[in-house]
Length: 339
Image (cartoon, rainbow, N blue to C red; front, side, top):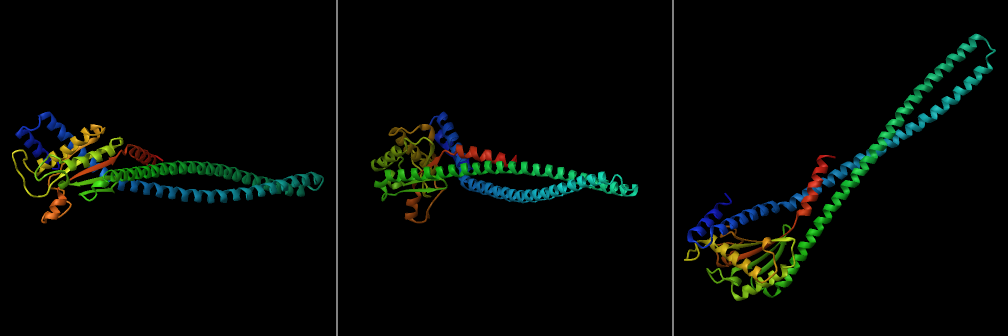
C-alpha cells in the first residue's frame, strides 16, 4: 500500500514523457530503498535502548549469581577446614591408639580385642572423613572454576555493554556536531523559514517553500539556491551519512501543463534541490536521495494560510551510518542466546 502513490507518480511521469523509463525505474527503486531504510532506522534508538537495558539486567543477574557462588564457596571452604581439623584429630588419636596397642600387647587378650575394636571403629570413621573431605575438595574446586568462568563472562559482557554505550555516545556526539555545523552554515537564513533540529538520532533541516520556490514552481530562486549551496558545502566533507531530500506540499490541488498533482510537484522540487547540491559541492551522489511526499505528511493545519505555508517545505534528513552499531548489537544478541 505504501508504494501505491509512487506507482501512480511513476505512471504519470511515463505518460507525460518527462522522464525516460530507466530513470523512472531508478527513482522508484531509490524511493523504495529510502522508505525501507527510514522505517528500519525509525525505531533503532528504541531498540538500542532496549538492548542496552537487557544487557544491564543480564549483568545484574550474573553479579547476583556470582555473589551467591562466592558465599557458597566460602561456606564450602569453612566445612573443608572443619573436616580437615577433624581428620587431623582422628589421625592423631589413631596413632595414639596404635602406640597404646603396642604398649598393651602384654595385657589380657580381652583388653586387646576391645582396643582393636575401638581402633577399627576409629579407622572406619577416619576413612569416612577422608572420603567426605575429598568430595568437598572436588566440589570446592568445581565451584571455584565456575566462579572464574562466571567472572570472565561478566567481564566480557561488561566490555560489550561499554563498547555499545561508547558507540551510541559517539553517534550522538557526531549527530550533535553535524547539527551544529549545519546551523552555523545556515545562520544567515534563520529568520527566513529554515529550522535545524536533532531528533531520533538524525538531523532535520526544514526549508519553507517561500524561501525556495515561487508558487507552483519547481525552479529554486536565487536566495533559496544560496541557502541550498551553503547546506551542501557544510555536508560535502561528511561521508558517513545518508541525505534524504523530501518535498512536501499543502492540500490545495494543482494541475498545470508541467505539473500533474501535488505528488508530482513535491518530487520535482526535491529533485531540483538535489541537483543544486550536486552541482555546487563534492557530495557523493550515492548518499543522496530525492523523494516527494505530496500533501500527505503535514506538520500544520491545512485549513489556515499560515499552516499551509508551513506544510509547503523541503526537508533534508541527515542520517548517520549505523553499521558499527548494528554489528555490536548482532554480536551481543548472539552472545546472550549462546552464553
